Image 1 (cartoon, one colour):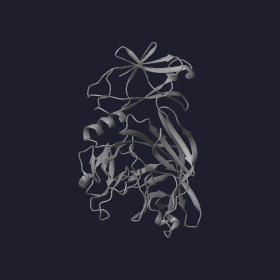
Image 2: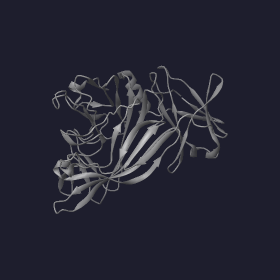
Image 3: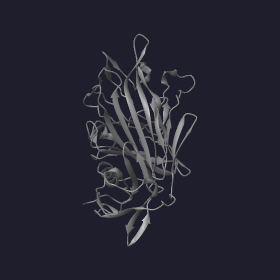
Image 4: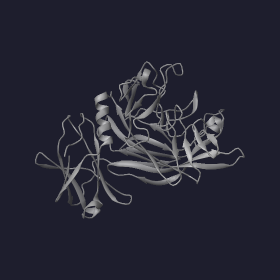
Length: 392
């Protein structure tokens, strides 16, 4: 079986369901890669969400397919080479690797600057998103858009119970999105993650409130492959919160948005999509992925935003601010599956969107971004042999 084809540095997340075979107890397993006649210890992590799944990272090199052989054996695991952490302090949950903070989820209510209408308060968003070298890539409460919150996921034109609601533009006072509690928080040698509930709340004309959409958001940050990049996966599961259907109506933006660092403007940053579009013509185009990168003081970095093939309206339409935005040409990027068509949500059904962010320092090319998307979109193929796992 063939492996994923990718350029150097395109890591793959490998996962395998241990319940598919009669296997060994979890507590006494060690994982090795067999290469060059040697057995090299590999860090792994176990997840139990209805079935036992083992995860590990597989770095890839070159552009040719290759067979990789791993052994899962009954033996006490070695001490992990690295550990991912998740720590909650004062309403902020920070995912980190060693002494490097990578991503922070704000579950407390964050208010706008003093003197600004408190309607612009919000919880349940990511900020900061840091590069591996520690620079912030996100921004909140910019004076031109106080309702922008780093990485966040509201919808703009939403038809619900006879009215059109806006969860994005808080100034309209029609609705908001709120943190409603954690389902889980995990840390370990391969990843740290959290699952959180968000409520998309409608402000009714009679002064009451009603939840229109329940959202289960899972954010997982994987062990950095090196000092120059790491992977963060965001999974958004939506369902109707009542017996009333919801329609996410066609509009030019909505869904997963990224308000980028104030350090970037039209002269020191760039955008490139999987369709070969640059910033000047990316808006409205459809893409599997988009690179947004630029100068960070004396450094350089950014992120590749990737859309999963099973997402609604994939490849997804993009909302990319033009170079003339906000005088300086500030940077905003958004995968907006409803940019060119409605998305009806019916009660009793779950709707899932999956995204990956490859966050990096240095400069990313189109070939490397495509290789990274391939690793996201298509899991490595695994064949099982007695006493070993062979990954291709």
